View 1: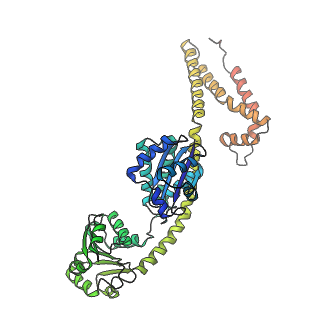
View 2: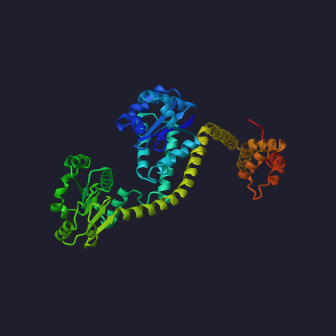
View 3: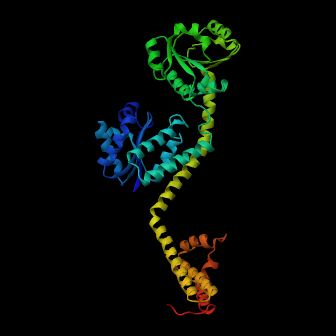
Length: 450
């Protein structure tokens, strides 16, 4: 069974198409069961569906990518050619390589973003709960998450913020050691402020208030975070209550004057206030930066930080790619080991059978009054001869047929010479075994078989 990664992402598909094929979390279970029930070529499946990608990871027969395209076109009412023009497929090693890059943030729109690893883990957990994951995807999920965690711990891929909103909240975290005891005032209710609110909520900010010219928009955003909402005209009266102020209103004139901040600082009795003005034109009067106990950062300050951090992440990404490649190889290696498990089981069972038979023979000899020392020596010699016989026979055959590749491999296991020469080994294959056989009949007392 092969591993298939089939999907569309922000590089290959428009936002409109991504929205139409996305699966809300509450619909994932139904979709997973539908795939395994409706597509006979797919035996296991997990689905990752975010704003930037929808991807299917399957244990599947070859050519099943076409089956998924047809299923997706039918279930989401999308033209087949539209999907085919925007989708991609990766198989086996390439599929493992791709999902590890996804989970570690190397394939994200924001390089190294941390949320995706949790989203990948959640996708696997949902599929596991639905019973659509078996041994193939269990192995893939194990290697994927293990490698992604290694990348997070051994590189700086996610160490420094590279979005303006995230940088603003990170700076607040540096000014205040514990944001959970602080209050934040967000000016505006657009997309940027929404992202800021996301990051503040993730950092467990004590409380948030959304201030906007249109109160209804402030209320709508505030409802997502259990936050309060006010109009911009109310700011001056309550500004002193807030430790963090982040502004992005889109107004053509400043909405927060220096005199209002000065009054707030006096009421705060020198408790510091952190401010970020992300807007262009500015929302906070430039003179505010000169006030004592106010830490004001502008969009230019944060852009410089973001660009510097992006360069650091890109350097870290080069190191991370090496770990990704190693993880993909680990997956292939473990997959081959599992596929050959029957051979390994047979090999161990055969060795155990030989051991049990020889031990039983030695015990019988001793029980009948035989020489214990001789029985133990015979046990050791018989075990050695029988256990190495298949290998020595293979070596003789390989030597006779000129199979230097096989001899070299066996030599790396049994006689690892630095110059990789097998002559000392192959010259003595026959003589060594013959000598062992001679010893077994001349140095030990003989005994009639029972």
